[in-house]
Length: 419
Ligand code: AMP
Ligand code: GLY
Image (cartoon, rainbow, N blue to C red):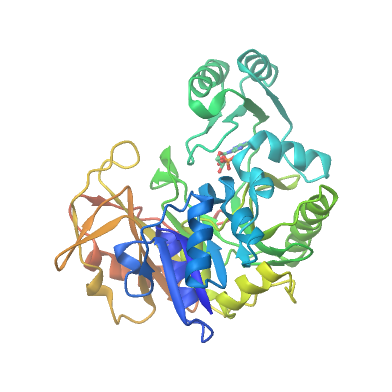
């Protein structure tokens, strides 16, 4: 099977690693790929946002499966163009990807199809201000469009909420705003793969979005993840019935043939799980902690979804747990400084340790930081505590000065201390 993977981040390095394990793989290209995944895939200088260029490459090289990593190519209609040319694609079309690319569309979808979610008002600057006042300032203010994790401000007082409306209204993504009631509770990432008519759940995971230990500091793209989150059977059943069954029914009613990942960001509130957001692709850095645990051929799974032939409602996982700790460049997220030295080869051969590159660059024999989130050190163990120990045991070998990482990834899960 000849496969093209779109993307270049840590999630895509993990996806390339998982695809490369499949006995069915004969050739893997990555566009644009990264130096870090160079041993797994041939890099191609192709614009992943250009539907025509990606289709032309697939036709020329006889690509048999397109796997889309990030959201931007989905929103740009790349999956539609390639699917229209007869190539199976793992990733929804532009219409389905609106569940991520427009928060207003996602909220409307959730409300119309009865998914549990926060009460919200959608509108321009004036409506948003009025809504913030109506919620007494206890609200989440969100820009409608894609904003790379920077489009949400959580507020607990009115002056803060008014300032948030003004700030987001001034950004490109913020001509339409959402103002939501403030919810509380632990957050989990629940992902499913869909084949157009059915879905299979991946094991539950948890991101660590804030920059600093203790969930302090600014929001980031994600500073670490753990998998699995231990969920009691009744809660899992409720997530299935109230979120994913209804989402699937909703997609069908709306005439959306959705093939790829549906990611629900859930808050486990005292009133039950509520859906904060959808993404149309795998989470980053959750993927780096989920894929090593799967007891399934990832290529076959993507292909089954792309062809509409999913035959299970749960992607099987191995026993054990995985913890991924993100290393970021000094200055991240505002102004990451490039150039810090990394030594991922020092972790090679350590039992239960993997390194997935996100923003690195090979300079001769040396690995240098070349992005905000630089790489993830992943530990795999019999349980979360063992996985955590492995990740943190390897970290000082891989990363040093001018780099930062959280020291408390997976120290707690669902409020319970593990460390
Ligand atoms: P989103 O991009 O919608 O997931 O929002 C980013 C983060 O903002 C979430 O992970 C939550 O921590 C927080 N958040 C979003 N919506 C709410 C809400 N209604 N109440 C409380 N926190 C929220
Ligand atoms: N880890 C959060 C995301 O991928 O959106």
